[in-house]
Length: 81
Picture (tube, rainbow, N blue to C red):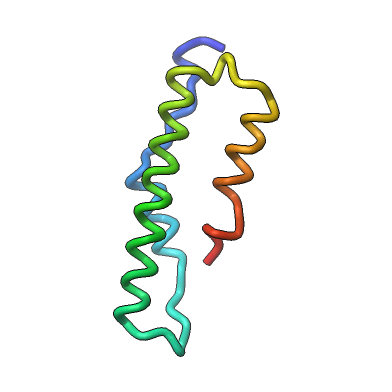
Protein backbone atom coordinates (compact mmCIF):
# COMPACT_ATOMS: atom_id res chain seq x y z
CA UNK A 1 0.00 0.00 0.00
CA UNK A 2 1.40 3.36 -0.99
CA UNK A 3 1.36 6.27 1.42
CA UNK A 4 -1.11 8.20 -0.76
CA UNK A 5 -3.52 5.24 -0.42
CA UNK A 6 -3.74 5.57 3.35
CA UNK A 7 -7.23 6.08 4.70
CA UNK A 8 -7.68 9.16 6.87
CA UNK A 9 -10.98 10.00 8.57
CA UNK A 10 -11.69 13.49 9.84
CA UNK A 11 -12.37 12.81 13.55
CA UNK A 12 -14.39 16.00 14.07
CA UNK A 13 -16.62 15.43 11.06
CA UNK A 14 -17.10 11.76 11.89
CA UNK A 15 -17.96 12.44 15.55
CA UNK A 16 -20.38 15.22 14.61
CA UNK A 17 -22.11 12.90 12.14
CA UNK A 18 -22.52 10.26 14.84
CA UNK A 19 -24.05 12.61 17.41
CA UNK A 20 -26.16 14.39 14.80
CA UNK A 21 -27.85 11.07 14.06
CA UNK A 22 -28.80 10.24 17.65
CA UNK A 23 -32.19 11.12 19.01
CA UNK A 24 -33.21 12.02 22.53
CA UNK A 25 -35.34 9.41 24.23
CA UNK A 26 -38.57 10.83 25.69
CA UNK A 27 -37.63 9.81 29.26
CA UNK A 28 -34.14 11.33 29.02
CA UNK A 29 -33.63 14.75 30.56
CA UNK A 30 -31.84 17.44 28.57
CA UNK A 31 -28.87 17.23 30.94
CA UNK A 32 -28.63 13.46 30.55
CA UNK A 33 -28.90 13.74 26.78
CA UNK A 34 -26.20 16.41 26.61
CA UNK A 35 -23.88 14.27 28.76
CA UNK A 36 -24.57 11.25 26.56
CA UNK A 37 -23.90 13.30 23.43
CA UNK A 38 -20.66 14.69 24.84
CA UNK A 39 -19.49 11.22 25.87
CA UNK A 40 -20.39 9.80 22.47
CA UNK A 41 -18.62 12.67 20.69
CA UNK A 42 -15.42 12.28 22.72
CA UNK A 43 -15.37 8.48 22.41
CA UNK A 44 -15.89 8.69 18.67
CA UNK A 45 -13.38 11.51 18.18
CA UNK A 46 -10.57 9.75 20.04
CA UNK A 47 -11.35 6.37 18.51
CA UNK A 48 -10.98 7.87 15.03
CA UNK A 49 -7.80 9.68 16.04
CA UNK A 50 -6.43 6.32 17.23
CA UNK A 51 -7.49 4.72 13.96
CA UNK A 52 -5.76 7.44 11.94
CA UNK A 53 -2.61 7.04 14.00
CA UNK A 54 -2.63 3.30 13.33
CA UNK A 55 -3.23 3.97 9.65
CA UNK A 56 -0.27 6.31 9.44
CA UNK A 57 2.18 4.33 11.53
CA UNK A 58 1.46 0.66 11.03
CA UNK A 59 -1.52 -0.25 8.86
CA UNK A 60 0.82 -1.97 6.42
CA UNK A 61 2.03 -4.23 9.22
CA UNK A 62 -1.29 -4.96 10.90
CA UNK A 63 -2.69 -8.41 10.50
CA UNK A 64 -6.15 -8.80 9.06
CA UNK A 65 -7.46 -9.90 12.47
CA UNK A 66 -6.29 -6.66 14.10
CA UNK A 67 -7.94 -4.59 11.38
CA UNK A 68 -11.16 -6.56 11.80
CA UNK A 69 -11.13 -6.05 15.59
CA UNK A 70 -10.61 -2.30 15.13
CA UNK A 71 -13.55 -2.02 12.75
CA UNK A 72 -15.69 -4.18 15.05
CA UNK A 73 -14.94 -1.71 17.84
CA UNK A 74 -15.89 1.22 15.61
CA UNK A 75 -19.12 -0.44 14.52
CA UNK A 76 -20.07 -1.89 17.91
CA UNK A 77 -23.46 -1.26 19.43
CA UNK A 78 -21.88 1.41 21.61
CA UNK A 79 -22.02 3.81 18.66
CA UNK A 80 -25.51 2.99 17.44
CA UNK A 81 -28.14 5.67 18.09
